[in-house]
Structure formats: structure tokens, C-alpha cells
Length: 425
Image 1 (tube, rainbow, N blue to C red):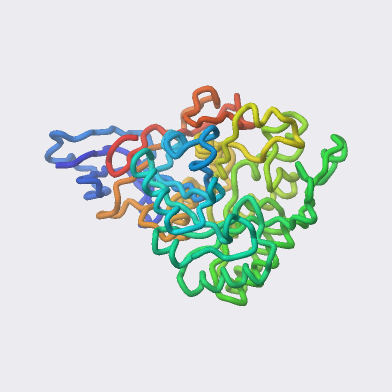
Image 2 (cartoon, one colour; image 1 turned 180 degrees about the horizontal axis):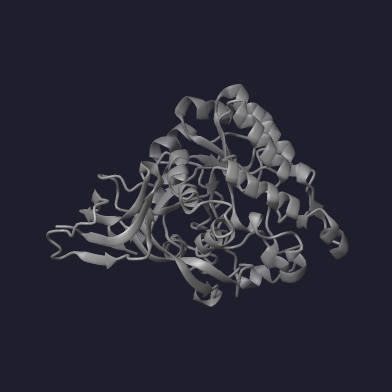
């Protein structure tokens, strides 16, 4: 007997080129039937979901989140962060290593899995840090962390400025087959910066970060990936120059992938004047030229995946003003409707293309067994109503934090059901 049946839904599974109305059955946490519109013979003790008029997709994957645990549980925990993820349609998240202590040893990778097993709503896949304590001076035990379950390595939040260390990390990537996820900012060029360098920063009298700060490190790391054969993944790309560098590298056959976040293809740096610290992040919001380039990159495949960079902070932390407030916004619950409203509805991406960038592609980059509705695959499913309109109400967020620039925005297309191994979460 099935744990769950989803009937009459429009099934979109890019990994298997499925796009049509049908049914889906999950038994013992695994997908057992996909496609046919015939009724299932035995629905006793089964949760039946009628998805008529709805989209049935593989469970969404966010390959870039900050769950803050351990060390910053006043901002977020694995429990609350994954609850927000489930509410946004995500069944799997990959969490960054810049916790306290930093996730920089096999034992700490195991600790994340242990906490997640006890408290998480969704699947949690941890990254290990590239350098010990994010110090940029000594590589971590990547072999050991990989054996413990790390899906990749990142010093997100800071750039590994030592090119020889980055070369060695990418060489290990080539040997062991994992991605090196890079935060690209030349710290000497953006020292003290709190937003993009441009007309708005000059108007507000704030220190700005130039596009070159990102472009220089993207170019460097592409050259190192080309030299070593390693897998370079550029996190939260934000500049037109970086998009073009990645595009040209791919044409040369460099193993480079990248992601974009909704705020970087929707909001410009003028939002800082309107919203203050809820528009403060690194890399910062850029200009319309950069937005146009990111959208073009999403359309032509230069930008592989969509991620959130979910970065929770408390209201008191964000109230400190532009100079002292931490960078980042929450995004797990608004990502899907932002994608549908600002990429799919205007025709930049088809619905299938958008789902691919949130399922099969991140799964492939991370090397995890998710992102598909294949028979025998784990029964992680997201059901989407592309026609529903709702306003973003941050007071109802499952996250501990409330730092978003999208409060009050009316968005079209929301998650309705999220199943993890056939169970509603």
C-alpha cells in the first residue's frame, strides 16, 4: 500500500523529461508509480492529494542556506530554518559552514547530520569550510569531511585570498569529485563597503563595493579551476562582468557552475535608500545593467541554479544601521513565488526551466540523490499552485528572523504541499 498518492496533477520532472497530467504514488518513502491517469487500485491507509490544476514537481533543493546552528541559534536553528524551507517548497537544503564553531572537521560534519536527524523538517546536506576556522591560512581535512558526508566546501562570507590555497583546494576537488563553492570579493577593494559603489552610495555617503571586487576573484578562480581541472562553483553571482567571465569559461570547457539569488535579479542598489539594512548584503545589490545580465545568464544557461543565500539575522541586529548591521536577508519562503512572478510570468524562463534550476541541476552539482521523480527515487515532492496570489507576510514566517525586503509584495505562484519521503512536512 502507498504512503501517499498525488492524483490529477500536472507532473513536471525535468530529469526524466516528464511534462503532463498524471498520478504519482509513493510507497515506503520511495516513488513507485509516475504518470498514468488510471486510478490506483488500493488507497487504504494512504494519504491522497488531489492536485488537479496544480504542478507536481520534485522536491525543491536550495544549495545555499545559512542555518546558523551551532553558535547563532538566536538567529536561526536547523529546526526553524528547515521549517521555513518546507513552507517554501524546499525538501533539501545545503547549509554553509560559517557557524560557531566553524564546520571545519569530520566531527562537525557528523554533528550537523546528528542535529538534523533529530530536528530537521527537510533533508540537510552540510558544507565543510575550505580553510580552518575560515582563517584563509590552512586547508581543512577535506578528505575526512568528504567521508563524513560533506557535499562540498566553502568559506562563504569570506574569500580565500591565498591563491595557492585555492589552487590546492581545487586540485583536491578534481581528485575527489566535489565542488568548491566560492564567495568572490577582493577584500582590499571593498574594505568597509556596505553597498554597491555607484550613484546611490555617493548620494547616501556610504562606502561602496565596485563590481571589480567580484570580477577579479571570479577571474582568478576560473583560471585556477582551468589549471587544476577542479569543479568551481561561484556563489551568488551579482555582476555583469562575472556572468560574462563564467560564460566564456564554460565555452572553453572549464568545470565552472554558478547560481543566482532572487534579490540579485530583482532589486537594484536604489533599494538601500528605501529599505536600509533589509537591502544590505554581500555581494551587494547592483544596477539594472547587472540585473539584465543575470537574467540573460539564467536564460542562456550560463547561470546553472537558483538559490536563496537564506541569511537570517535578528531585528535588533538589523536595526544597528547600514555600517554596523550584518549582511543578508531570509529567502526560503519567498524564493519560489519570486521565481514564478519575476522569471516565469514575464517569459524569461519556462516553468520547466525554472524547476530544473531548483531541482535536477543543484542535485547534480551537489551529487545528491534528490531532484527527480524517477521510480525508485526518494519521494520528495513539491506541489505548486502557479495561479495563487498572496502577499508576503513576514510575521507568519517559520524562520526565527524577519529580515526581508519583500514584505508586503504581492507574488503569484506558491507552494501548497511539500512531501518528504511521502510524508507531508
